[in-house]
Length: 240
Image 1 (cartoon, rainbow, N blue to C red):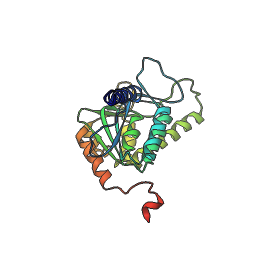
Image 2 (cartoon, rainbow, N blue to C red):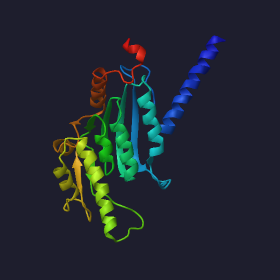
Image 3 (cartoon, helix red, strand yellow):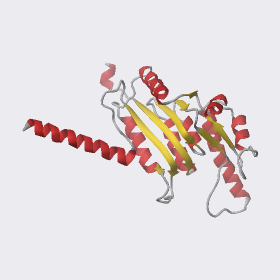
Image 4 (tube, rainbow, N blue to C red):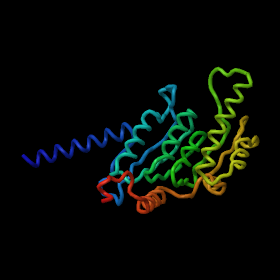
């Protein structure tokens, strides 16, 4: 009878894990050195407007509660963010990046495939950032869909939005503001567009990303951050 109960409990646990993977791409390892949460940001960042069902999207209303839960849960010791994104909603992406940057939880980001457009602030928002050699990152000026009024106020709004992104990226990476703005305004690299595509090695050379590396490098770095970090949100009883 007990064996049957144990078997049913195992099956239920396995079903819960599968459901968790299908919903948010999340899984909890059973035998790890440190318990870390893996957050995947893929496709386009979906913000205030719902994108086509044919687009692979990351919804910011799903990511924000996950980040809040990870920051509160002291059993989760670190956060690994894996990025392969084409960009998307600027304000939604910047909101997620600001939340990650403000976490006490040790964080490491890993760019695989691409970290384009608003994916750049997301990549540098972690305490340490990695990029695989084959990945690329596209830096380009802010764009807007829909109705655009040809008035000075519109251009001023674009400038303010661009400044927010530039300030965040340069504050959370080793790239200078001058270098970042120069890459934004390049005209000879993208077809009928402005901006720059940085390959993995170049992203590190310019100071945008901290290091080249793969999954094992990112996890090893995160483990090191965990082991050298103070316990966050300690109880008053812990200090007595």
